[in-house]
Image (cartoon, rainbow, N blue to C red; front, top):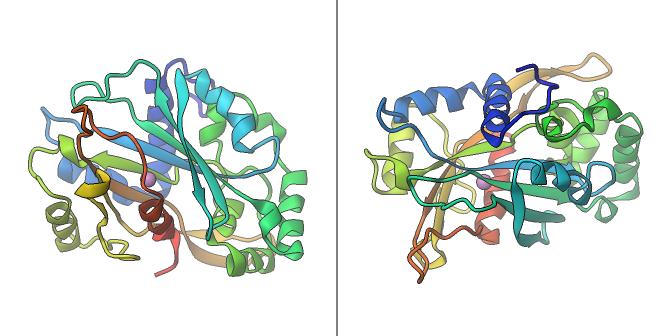
Length: 279
Ligand code: NI
């Protein structure tokens, strides 16, 4: 499938998204082959996207394309310190047990008006250069760079206020991460066991707020690698290795009704966002 074609199913959507993702985060493909067994493919818990709260790319504008894939809103979240709002989406009618699990989708947006005026001006400049041909349905979510590269000065100005804004200015639209549902792994029964194994294999684990975010009490434990890096050329020709995307691991606990908890835990997600910080 061409990358600009509308996916015909949510399965096609996630395949196209994965191909784009592992091109910038090859560690995810390597980890997938370390963990997957021929008879037990990995279960993807969720994918996450970043955007600005500005039409036509804010959550309200782009969520109809998730509806085209059969996804409906589930929950809303606020990240005060990071100046973000977020919404989660679930495939309508999905059983969400280990046999039938549709990945959740997590959309966040930066509250641009909460940044300084110079930072807002940089973002508005990017938005005026938005490639509108990319606003074409679900394929938007893997359409990559949305505007011409910023200058290194603009990038650093954004970075000083919001790592999220800086990342989005250069990475554009793509899965910020995919997530392994640890419950579905045969060989690991705890998240700490899995993270130790990955560290032994040479992967860096995000330890902001501790390697394991959350607990059984909040029904969700999460961890992640630090993002891969790739050379990026700014508009002024300056080249630098920048953080790209990372791989996340989630262990979900059953709710009182006996179903796997389907929410996110803001205090944990807040630290997961830092997986694209420089290290
Ligand atoms: Ni996540």
